[in-house]
Image 1 (cartoon, rainbow, N blue to C red):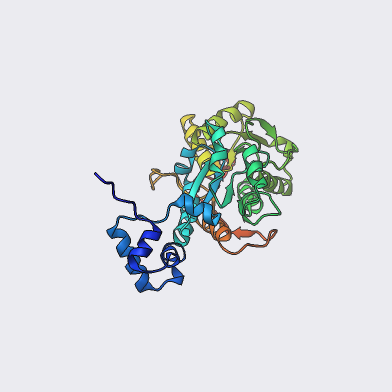
Image 2 (tube, one colour; image 1 turned 90 degrees about the horizontal axis):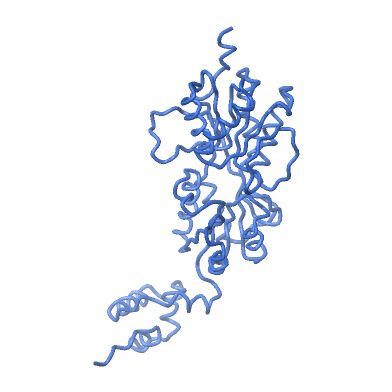
Length: 358
């Protein structure tokens, strides 16, 4: 039995009596072909079961593969469970749908790091949504020289999308200070990979993680303005999640029993801290005030639950702006796009309980 020959661009052109270039343009550069001819080409392609040009061959020919890589600092599953990252990826994907681009997710926490070389080889550019500057994969990615947009990352030579973390953190700490709190601790995700220390706020540390560095500076601004000695404020590093927030409460209370407020650098940390405080009999906000940062409820959280006092940042818009910047005309480096954020008072902060008794 003779096997039917597979249709190709050349055979379709021959069947229809048009040039190979016309058929190629119908798929790769449709604006150069009339609508009538495109319809005729696609109808014949369907009839002969032709699915379109081979993507690998197109990539070799054009030098582009039609995909952007998104680097983020966690395991792959994190991108589908963290409310902030879900909104961020929705923003990126909304632009990619409009532009006909695909997305390759590149997690920095991978059980098989040797595969990252393969992943980073199949994209036309990057959105860098990962905070640690000295991470080997990030450094290797930046060294490739492909178009790159950084998000919440310190890279003056690249286009960037930023939230004003320092100002927003100063605002939320000032809120607690204005309520009368003076025994406050900070719960943050690690400033460097693998870290998990407790240290005083006056400690110097490098700007390895732009977000942590900016938010710490905002905290220092607020405490200094209120005359609170920085060496009396504890900072606890913990993994960014509800479990990390719960563990941070235990660690901090072992060091400082008179805490009345916790400043958390994400809503996930704050929700974990609230749950642990309640389990310990420290009702929120009567015995412990807790603040967050992000303004996005985690998936599955009941809407009638405690409303966090937090900073709401627009993660969806952050993702859209990053993708638009990468896929549009090159943006001048050193001119960051600033995403608006706002202070949102909720039910999780109140005057410290010792002042209520007076």
